[in-house]
Length: 403
Length: 81
Image (tube, rainbow over all chains, first blue to last red; front, side):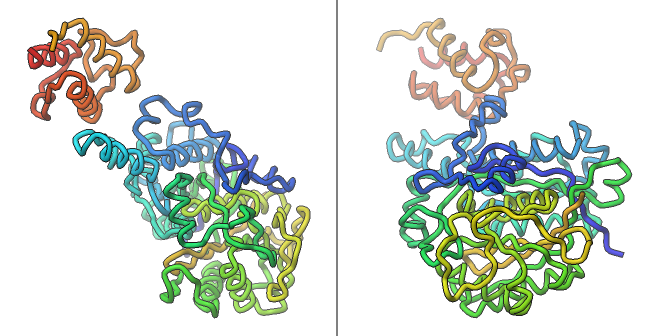
C-alpha cells in the first residue's frame, strides 16, 4: 500500500504579512496586500529573522524561503532535533521561477561600473536557483535529498508534488517543501511588462470581466510533509493530507495556454485519480486565477472539462492571487498553504475584486465575502489547487484538511 | 602615495570583517578566522576590499595559509610596501 503523506507545519511570508495564519485571516477578512500595483512583502525585514552572515550571503528569495521554513518547522515541533527523524531521511525541495535576480542585477551594475574583478564571490551562490533550497538545508541541517525545482509559475506546486513522491516511494520520511520568489525589481517589472502580462491598472481581479493582467508579488510558502505513521508515532499534530498530484504539459506555446484547456484539464483529472477522489468529493477549488484574460478563461474551461459542467458550477472557486498578486515560482506553494488553512478553518476566502461577471466565465468564484466551507459528504474537506505556467506546465494538487 | 601604516590596515580589516558578521569586540590580531566563522568566501571579499583600497592583489594561495587576523594584516602591509 502506498505510504500516506500528511502536513504537520505551514509557513508563509506574503504581501499580507509574515505568517501562514496572517495570510488566511487577512484574506478571509477581505484584505488585499497589493499596493501601487505590486504585492511586496513590505513588513518583511530579513534582519529581524536571520543573522548578519545569513542575510549577506543570500538573495531575498532565499531569505523568504528560510523564514517561511522556520515557521513551518516550528509548527511541526521539530525544535532542532529533526522531529526525531534520521537527518538522512529528511529531504528538502524548494522552488523558484527566476532565482536571485536582485543579486544578478546588483552584481551586473558593479561589473559595468568597476569591471569584472569587482564582482562579488557571493554572486553565484546567491543567485543560483538552488540557493534557496541550499540555504534552508544548511540552516536546518537537512541531509537527505535536497534540490530546487524550476517550472515558472507551477514551480511551487511541482515542489510539493516531488516531495509527495519522495515520501510515497520511501526515499524520505519527511520533506520540507515549498517555494519562494523575489522579483520586484526594475528589470523584473520591465521584462514582465514587455510580455504585456502585467495589469495596466495594477489590480488583480481574477475571473472578472475587467481583468487585464496579473499583479506581480513576492513571498514564500513552505509545508512540512511527513509519512503518516511516522508523524503519528512522534505525536505530531496532523493538519491535513496531500492526497494526490499530477502534472501535464501543453506543448503548445511559450506563454499562452492551450486554448482548449485539454492538458490543464488532464492534470486535474489525473490528480483526482491519483488521490482516489471523484469530482463529487471536492469541496473547493483554489484556482491558479491569475487575472489574465487567457488564464482565467482556459482554467474555467479546464475545470468544466474535468469536473463536468454541472459539478464544476457547484464547487466554489477562489483565487489567492486576488489578495496577494502572483508570486510566480512561490505561488503554488503559498496557495497550497492557503488551501490547507482554508480547509482547516472550514472557511473559503473570496476572490477579491470580482464584481463584473464575464459572460463566458460562469462558475461560482466566491464574490464578496468569505463563506463557510460546506463538506460534500461529511468527510474531511478536500480541495484542489491548480498551478499553470509559462512554458505550458500544468500541476494540480489534491489536498485534504484535518481537524 | 604616502606609506600605509599597520594601524590603518588593521582598522580597515577589522571594519571589513565586522561587516561580514562577527561582533567587532571579538576581532583582534590573535583571533582566528575559524573562531570568527570567517571562511574562504569572506576572505575573497576581504581581498577585493584590500585591492580597492591599497592596490594589493591577494590570490587564493596567499590567503590559504592565513589563520589569524594578525597574519592577514601583516601580509597586506608587507605587500603594500
